[in-house]
Image (tube, rainbow over all chains, first blue to last red; front, side, top):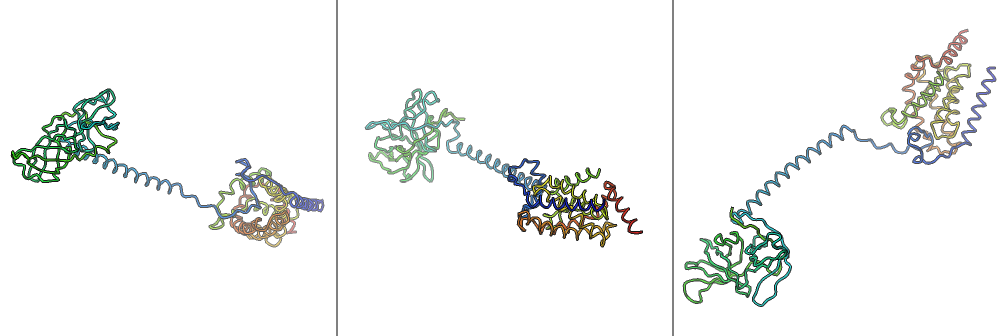
Length: 263
Length: 173
């Protein structure tokens, strides 16, 4: 009996050997196996290949992310503070540059340069519907371009500084003091400013700014620079020829200062 | 119960294989728990054949969980049990340490047999993972005392134990 069992066992082993050699299973690729089966299957013929990369420790990874989050929050806080400081600076600049006037700048696009031999006008894309009204200053940054002459529903006509009918109260700054005067357009691209006696110190290149005496415009806007100082009629009142700083032909976008009322 | 024990070992080994700890650079060769069980059965077989059949059954279960050719593990486990039974005459596995030594030698023999069989079955020596089998023999020998203690204490293989007692008595006569 025992001998029979041993023979049976040996026969079984031989059968298994034959099965093994001849019965290699053709199975689909590992990717085609169901997930559960793939996790349970074991292939003794499979070349395990290089050892898998060591997964980073989750706690270490969490700590790294926490440090990163802290760093980002700190940067965010610094940027907010910086932004706040810059906003304050901007507010200060507007107060200093525009003489403390409360205004609401409205951006507008220059639609056209109005034709005419003597007239100097251009049309912008904002009108009464946007709050634009006659007498409002039009600027390019801190440079005065002109004054709104009339406004339609959606467009407005702006009189340039060098228009012959343009009158702006200005002051010419020198090293000692500022001399007030009235800038008048000439139609040839220049401004003529008549200064009162005592303005001998005005030199060529001096800056011309708007003044607080003109209720229509905020003080401190740049108007132009002095090109020539003369007294042709010898009446002791100097005539200054200034060239506007504004590049009238170039700007595509301008700003209209709405509600230019003192604070 | 013996069948349930074999099924549990097979399933646990297959399912936990990716997480079974290796030894430093032996990560690719976790201890082969079913193979150690086959060694245990073989070392307790003495003149009986039932433990050998149990080892074949264990290998057949392993076949169910593998993509190896059908009968691959059944044949190898039966052969391993036969080898353990033969070696048990010289290295009598009556303690955990003795079983560890027996497992080491059996594991080396198993590795060579597995290599030959893999080549016969169409695999290449490289694909057969001969190096991993050798490492498995080593890691298996390290945990062999635990496996031996587990089966001794569980009494799941009472037939094997009964055979061993019978064999010991027979040897003492």
